Image (cartoon, rainbow, N blue to C red):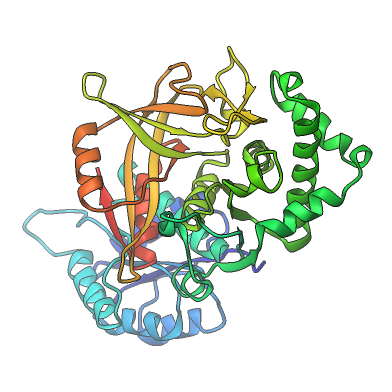
Length: 446
């Protein structure tokens, strides 16, 4: 993978107050280097379009932070748009002194010129940052923009696997390989579920004992699972692991019912749970955009995420319960119960995970949604995961929203969003909003 390369492009003209401009340039550069020490910065303000050209022509940036240190006309941004094809964050400085005297920087008028040029090039959304380097909001938004650009960069190297097809009526999870590539830069690899089932069946029992032992060490109560289901799970876990490792897969969306019950006799739920703890974003019901949503959440939080349906609304607590059959990562389980193993709630076959998730003070609920016309939108809200026991057979998590949970449910139903969502540890809505802008996608945020 080509290393991620963020670049600082500070521009201006020498007819403004260059002492003030130099002070803001050095303060801005210090903040960018503190945010990410990989930032490439020029030795000084780029005082001319030719200086912009000579600075950028040998670079291949993955993010440009473009700053009007002083006013500059649209030709500066036009040169950036011509030379570079990567996300651009526009940063405007406050006017440092208002005393009835000279306009020292006029950064804001320069930002209008730059943004107007960006729109001419078809850039209608982008991260916009207003303020001085010392401001906390500026520091937060810059860090969010960098993280978003890192996700754009990483998606270009992501191989996402579709294991089987979505069940009837679950078409919202399907994706075309060309669509994933053109919209997200992601490579889609497809394999039939029966291929992994047949591979699992081919393994001798004794060659899969290490996978059984790994499952036992990560879970509670596996001993209650019938021996034939337990060894079949170990075989399936090996088949998925070897497929993922052999093909360089970073995320997968797997068919689950009915095939793994009818053609194999053992569910895939716990396999997906363990893959999530192994760092592979693994969604069930073959939901490809659900798997990509999970992968992005894991990129931002550096932890497994929860994947499930909104199944219950409590207006008094202002909460929404998210639940699924039993594929949540073991590390998400409450500490007082551990990652309990049970049976699938409908088919009554195990092993499937059966626990409530632990509380955490900051949570983001997220979904990449696909519109019928092929465009995409992001669904987002922030809140907290409450200290609640298991709500239903399977795995569950209860989220208190920072906004009205009833409005979230009513709006998202009427807007036709999909029934699968990702719960991420931490507040990441700003970063995901920047990411949507970089991908030219709309955001529905609460």
